[in-house]
Amino acid sequence: MKKLSSTVRSLIASSLGLPGMQELLAQEPPDEGISYLFNYYDEEPLPADKLAFGSPERYTIYSQQLRWVKNLDESYSLTVELLHEGMSGSSPWYVMPDPVAGPLQVMSGATIRENRNQADVALSRRGNGFTHTAALGYSTEDDYRAVYGRYSGEKESADGLSTIAWGLSYSDDDLEPTDAALFGRVESATRDSFSVSTSFTQVLNRNALLQTGVTLTSQSGYLSDPYKLVWVGETVLSDSRPDRRVMWTWTTRFRQYMERSKAALHIDYRYLTDDWSVRTSTLDLAWHQPAGENWEITPALRYYTQTAADFYGPIFSTTPGDGYWSSDFRLATYGALSYRLDGVMRKEKWSLSLAAEYYNSARHLALSGTPQDTPALVDFWRFTASCTVNL
Amino acid sequence: MTSIHCSISKPCRPLVVLLLAALLAACAPVQPWERGRLAQPVMALDGNPMLSAMDEHVYSSKEASSGGVGPAGGGCGCN
Image (cartoon, rainbow over the protein chains, first blue to last red):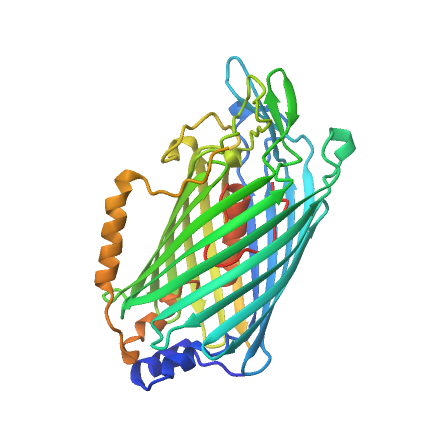
């Protein structure tokens, strides 16, 4: 089935005020096509003055993703996504005290090499103003497998100015850490994740729209990291986290069209709170500027801040009474800034997108909480190229 | 373990109320022939779903937060 180009759609939407026209556009099938994405992710080495021992080289990850969208008939659409990731490098292992330098990071010595493959199939049905999507997926690594499913639905109002959406997802994950006997790791474990979400999108005026939504996620099972250790007292113990985590996320996205520059300002904000005492805020600002006939250039800035989990510490002088401890830097108090530049070229039959990003995290960038010495905080570069061919 | 704490910090409350009031005030009837700009690619809520999914995957594997609008996908052993 042939889909109208965005230009034609805009012209129709602008020139025809016929009742039901917006309903027709909303029920229009998605663009048929094949998309390919390549992502290069490279973490900067750990500085020598923060390293106790192990390799300072951190992860480099190559990701490739393929997406195929096919309209089966007027009502049904199929989306198939395949992902392959190859990663190599060293991972933060534990933090040890140093009487002079303070906490120092111990890294895994050998270079870890691992692959991840994922397949995701989604079927969508449109009709009577509703869109329903059901999806199944499978992700596999040497030591980790996830089987997951999700359902989402949306309904547009009769006037076409608002949309309400809802969704559910479930993931069943199995872990089988490598070298479990050698390093005293758990041999096998499971964890489950369930989420429920809803969102509301409203056209505010002819130049602005707003979307806001909440998601509740519940994780249970083995939530510790089997590859991380913690310095507790005079010994080193396995990472130990509660076997349940409940998270609330509130996300708001705002789009404002700028008549003078024909550009759009995007403001996205996300707040997360959980029962591990983690609070996070993420603010994304992006300026989408059309350039020339086919290009769109987007400089963007992302700010992230989080407070630590209540069982986080780089080093524990005594054994915590509740039995929970972790020195995983991802549970620390810190903040991060990332700077990004995207370019998109759109033609009638295809589009090409390029993006570069630098991510810098540091404890002094935290907006609240009590930052502690966290030597493993990560900085990385990322380059992404993607293209879509409309069929 | 502490319970979930959902309140907005006190200094931020007037700002949130002001923001919501401004957004409500900004609401205006939009006729079908006035929606051309909203259909522009630069105004898309998610202009490149594949890239957005990769962004979410990268950030959630390095930060303590994950998720956004809509249901999540599967987990990974990313460390």
